[in-house]
Image 1 (cartoon, one colour):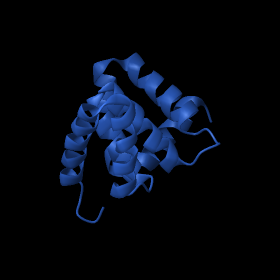
Image 2 (cartoon, helix red, strand yellow; image 1 turned 135 degrees about the horizontal axis):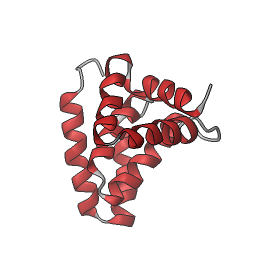
Image 3 (cartoon, helix red, strand yellow; image 1 turned 120 degrees about the horizontal axis):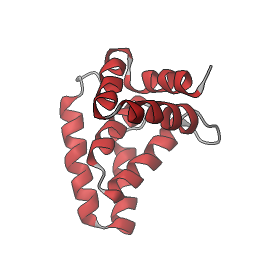
Image 4 (tube, helix red, strand yellow; image 1 turned 135 degrees about the vertical axis):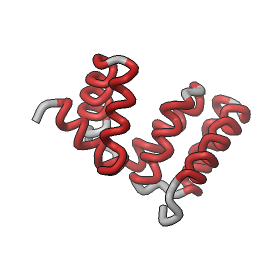
Length: 125
C-alpha cells in the first residue's frame, strides 16, 4: 500500500465513509496536487505514525491549528478529534493550553469554531 492509499484509508476512518469523498473532492477542487500531497503526506505518513494514539494526535493538532488561527483545518480537526475519541472536556482542556501560550483570543476563536462543529454534528455524536 502506498502513502496515498494509506492516507485515504486513514482519513476515511477519521471522517467516515459518508464524508471521505466530499473531503477529497474539496481538497482536489483547490488544486489536484494539493489533494494528493495532503492525503499522502498528512494522512499517509503523519496520521499513521506510531508513538501516540489518534486522540492524542488530534488534540495536538487542534492546539497548533488554534494557535495559528487556521480555521478551515481546525474545523476538520475538531470533527476528526471527536471521531478519534476526544471528549468535549478534553478538547476544552487542550484549548486552555492554547490560551496560555497563544492567547485567550486564540482560544475564543477556537471555541466559536468548536460550537459550530458541535451544532452541525448528529445528536448521537
